Length: 121
Image (cartoon, helix red, strand yellow):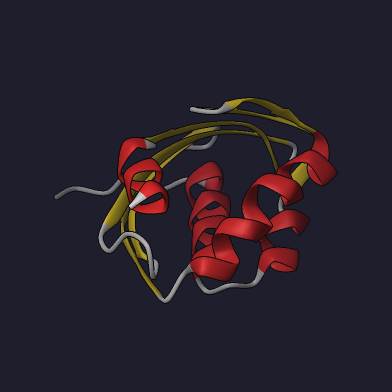
């Protein structure tokens, strides 16, 4: 696979490796104060809102693999898989917009059904 690199790709790579490595504070430091995240559960605004979205999930991760991070100077996409006690091999893709060295917009794509089924089992 050919990987395009640029400043957004580097920031996205640092971000996804931080949270998959359970370093929420490092991940949050890469976000703009007014970051917007569009996730399957709805729109999340601001760093504090994103912390409330990310922190509970990160505490459940038993292992994670970043498959790839591709991007250029303004946009990037990360593909990853995480293992949790409820759902092994939980896969996701995030698309990032980066401005002035900070992530300003994230589109999270993952299937909520495996987590929902595991919680109700």
